[in-house]
Image 1 (cartoon, rainbow, N blue to C red):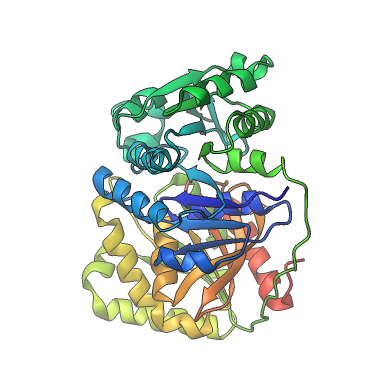
Image 2: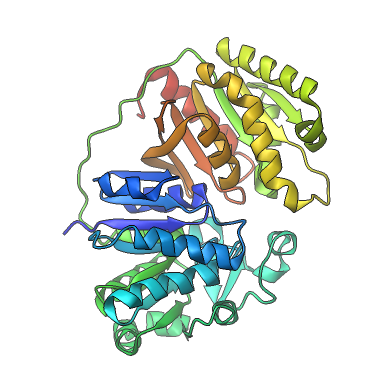
Length: 416
């Protein structure tokens, strides 16, 4: 049986990496944003929607999820609620709204939460997320951007009135998981928070979650999505037709994560790209410098050169400026749209702002370059190969690999 999925994510890169994970067994996958009602006409088995709620208040993020789910009654799709693996945004409020909507249809709702993504160093033990073996609260990611006083997942969900039960690693592995989850599903209106350290753990959770209830909502990151996909029989899908292009690749780094900044430094050091670092004050105030940068970027791309645009940040960045900066950057680079041969971006907010400004309203996904890095073709007035990467995923060589792959795709017109 081919399962059809609706993925809800609070940013673009999250929507893409979960959708391509679910689609890796040969199923067509697409990610869209904007007017959700247009999703009803999409026939792809895997449909992901970017709610763009990462920066919203808990109330507004919950309301957006209710609106999305209300617009998709009787879709015949299983639901995957993607959450950020470091708990940024408003996952508790969004999960509460999701359970509320599902419960209103069936009388009760049951969720299986597994936040681990072992391929990117995210594991869970005791209902807490670990990043490369360190508790989430110990990381720079948490210190720079967090919503909750504690990263204990039971406490996080309780802030939105969601009842949950921890399922220990021993319980995941001892052969009783199906019975445990089925019992919780029978009670209803509860989230099972499952520990996991390996892909096999996630496989056990996915299998037991599907067994527990036909209406289970799965909550997690691309690690759980991969596990669910492996339970389906592989199919074949018509390969994407990629237009060849003589124009260069535009790579934009807007994420503050160390992984993205290190990767930008490495890519620049290869000498294969022209680097355009942009100060925040330039994006906020200096129209003359912005115009000059835009012209130079356009000329470079038109000549077939690859370009790296990076929003510079100091040691203590003002997080509140993020939306303003990426909006300004999108306006700045719009002039270069006709000569973009391929596009890559780190950070979901950055990618969504630029693509929307460029006339793109979706991405037809093709494959996963590496964990958390999706490759596809833009949908809309601009049709070019694209790669999206969550800011904190990957290593210092990720952007080099992405740039090389996009160059090969746009020059050969093939994903192979």
